[in-house]
Amino acid sequence: EAAHVFSSALPLFFGCGTPAVPPQTGRVVNGEDARPHSWPWQISLQVKHGSRYHHTCGGTLIAPRWVLTAGHCIWPGDVYRVVLGEHDMSRQEGTEQVRDVLRIVVHPSWDIDHVADGNDLALLKLDKSPVMNDSVALACLPPDGEILPHGTACYISGWGNLYTHGPMPDKLQQALLPVVEHSVCSRSDWWGINVKKTMICAGGDDVSGCNGDSGGPLNCLGQDGRWFVQGVTSFVSSRVCNEVKKPTVFTRTSAFAEWLSQVTEPNNDDHTKNLTPC
Image (cartoon, rainbow, N blue to C red; front, side, top):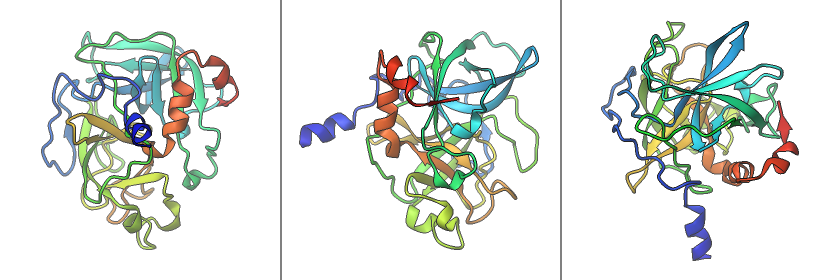
């Protein structure tokens, strides 16, 4: 039993969650520019419109050829690519690596018409592994079933709106979002029954949830000094993105550890064909 618990706590790959450039971890309320490449597992998911690609969602590099994003970011028939090593979208910085998406595996229980049911995840297989360096690195995933304590300091990252209905930034943003435990987040005057136990809430005071992207990571520092992606951004209040008692809601990655490892297992192409592709 002890051996099983220990093995389940291991990340998918060693050498994860340790950025060469440490993130800025100040308590900035309304978000800030991230330190360039301090979240090296953050990717830009881009969709093809005509002959050009446009940023549509965030995502996380969790294995050399696998990116984790939200199910609601994926639409049947659309063509996607992944940009890694990105920071400032307004210019070429020389750190970017572009990869085509070879296969898309949406969680089989995801339903766009029932967002509050959860399972808002998709895995993207890249055509080839990126080169790992100071700008591109793997995220750690938490052990199966891990629940973070109320008030744990985590950081959302992405190229989301700077404020409600505001402009999209060029540079990667981050914002501090403390975890809100399920017993609080599911109160009737908070999110109520819309929040399931497979989700994790963070924020909900005057901290901005705008700065993240759909599909992007909730980054939380582990006790061992590594960063773990504990959530995938799923939904926020439709009125304003920093509404009191309406924290940002994420798909809790520790609730899907088995599915994630199953799909991303090396040489598992036959298995992924049996899941729901888009």
